[in-house]
Image (cartoon, rainbow, N blue to C red; front, top):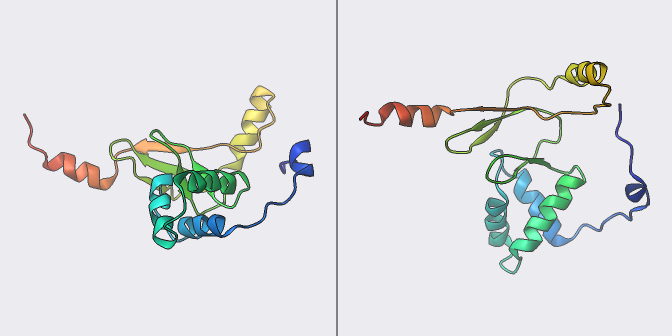
Amino acid sequence: MPRTNTPQEATAKPRRNTKQRQLVLDAVRSRCDHPTADEIYLAVREQDDHISRGTVYRNLNLLAGEGEIQAVHVKGGDRFDLRRDRHPHIVCRECGRVVDAPIPYDDELDDALTTETGYAFTSHVTTFMGLCPECQARDAQAPQP
C-alpha cells in the first residue's frame, strides 16, 4: 500500500537545494559504512569549513525525512544510509558498527501483522543485533582471567 501525503505535506512548498544540503547529501552518498551525523559533519567540514554542526544535523534530518537518504535508528544515535530501499540492518552490540543485512525485506510480515492485529502496516524495521567478526576476533584474543 503506497504511503499518502499528510495535508501538511500536500501543501508544503518544495525546498530549494542549498549548497550545504548538497554537500551533506554527497557526503552520505560517498560512504558505504552507515556514518554518524558527526562523521558526516567532519567530512563536510573538509569541503566547507564555515558550515556548522547544526546545519549538517538539520540537513541530515531533512534529507532523511524527504527520503533522499535513510536514517538508521540505533543505540547511541542515528546512522545514515545511502540506500533508500527497505532493507534490514545488522548492528554490532560491542562496537556499534552498522551494516546492511544480506537478506531481502519481507513485505509479507506487514500483511501478516495487519491480518493478526487490525493495524494497517505499510513497512517495518528489522535490526539484527550481534557481534561483528572483528569484535569476535578481539574477544577471542583477549586474555582470560
